[in-house]
Image 1 (tube, rainbow, N blue to C red):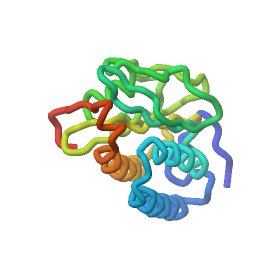
Image 2: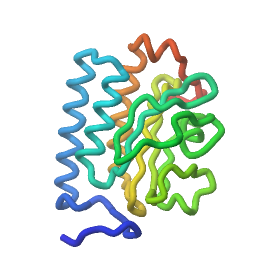
Image 3: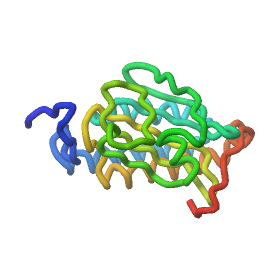
Image 4: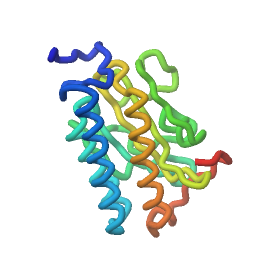
Length: 190
């Protein structure tokens, strides 16, 4: 299979050998996450484990972070990737992350160079997806994933990440440390 370059869409096949391989990987990842969440793992530890697993297992996920809403800002609680981001705090009115947390909606941007909301973290980033970690109309935070490939995130990635975030939201709602920092009510059902 041909290797992808930074400016080629990744699609759903990716370098791992096709959609069915990614489908199985997504299913195994969700099963693992349900098991970990069922162990009552602290949210911060679970978030770090999710970031590390997603970054390691999904080659088109170049950088993975989990931000939590704390007052009028998003704060980085966990991440994995080749280097840290300079954006460890993001105002709720800034960037794709701020937009997603403020609206409770997914931001799936196939070419970040064409979206005025984009806050550059890495020069190599070509596409980004931000999925709220929300439950019962309350946004606790979000998962933010950058890719070095154009159009890296398919509808299947979006559905998979929504499922990941639903599990994370369940843990967030039960975690005392997360409850202490707040979250944000959007007025929209999550």
